[in-house]
Every structure is written in C-alpha cells, then in structure tokens.
Length: 81
View 1 (cartoon, one colour):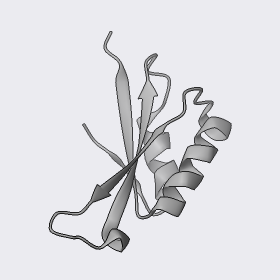
View 2: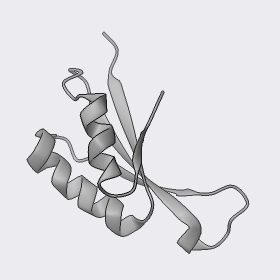
View 3: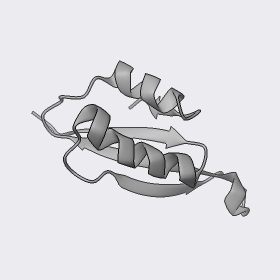
View 4: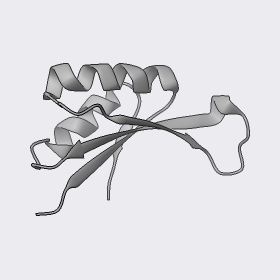
C-alpha cells in the first residue's frame, strides 16, 4: 500500500499554523505536518501567498471529507490528488 499524503490549502500563514496545531488534537495526527508557502503564479507579494499543510497518512486513517470540512473552517480546502 502506498503512503497517502493530504494537502490542505489555506489562505494565509496564520490559518495554516492554526490548522497544524489543531490537526493533532482533532485528528490524532502524530507526525508534524509540513508547512509550505505557495506563492500564486505571477505574484511577488507575500500577502498573496497561499499556505499548504502537507499531512502524511501512511495508514490511510484520515477521512478526506472530514479534512476538507476542517480546512473549510479556515477558508481553505483539501487539494484533490
């Protein structure tokens, strides 16, 4: 079975950092999710960057629908593979 990776897209760094903290409490994510700044194409302004939270899910434990709803609470979404 291949490892599953979920990518949550958040509107700003603050939201992404809150999501990282909340993932452990709400979903029991043991490994620290990776936080990645994703500058929008053609935009140099840091304010226009989206932030990605990359969650490793080697046992396919996490429910993508629940993750998408969770990201939605922070005006984000789950990126579909």
